[in-house]
Image (cartoon, rainbow, N blue to C red; front, side, top):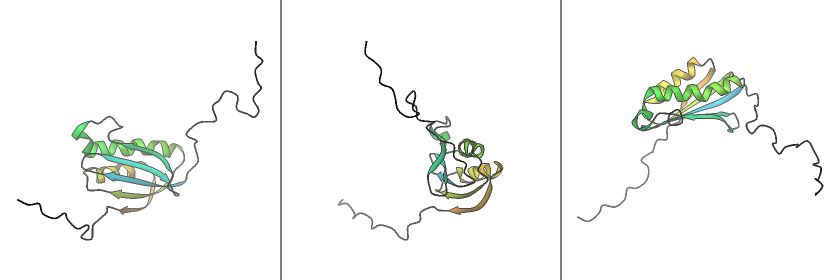
Amino acid sequence: MAKTIPRIGSRKNGRIGSRKNTRRIPKGVIHVQASFNNTIVTVTDVRGRVVSWSSAGTCGFKGTRRGTPFAAQTAAVNAIRTVVDQGMQRAEVMIKGPGLGRDAALRAIRRSGILLTFVRDVTPMPHNGCRPPKKRRV
C-alpha cells in the first residue's frame, strides 16, 4: 500500500477558509439599477468591490412582475440585509435608470437603518448622442 504524502501548511482538507470572507465594512456604496423589466441592487465597498447584490429576478419574481415597485423593494431588502450583518452603518446611494422601482428601492434602503450620506441620480443622458442610421430606401 502506498504511503500518503504529508501536507505542509494549515490546509488540512482542501478548503481554504470561507469563500465569502466577512470583512467589516462601516461605509459602502449602494447602486440601484432600475430598468422597466428588472431592478438590480448592488452593494459595494468604497473601492468598488461587490459585497452583496440582489435583483428582482433572483428574489423569485418572474416576467413583468420583476419591474414592479414591490419587487424592487424586496431586492433592496435582500441585498442590504447581509451587509447590515457585516456592520455597515453609512452608505452612498447611486440610482440609475427610468424604472418603477427607483423610489421603492430608495424607500427600502431608508427603512433599513443605514445612514445615507447622499443620494445621486447617475442615469446616463445623451447630449444628443450618436448619429442615427441613414434612412432606408422605400
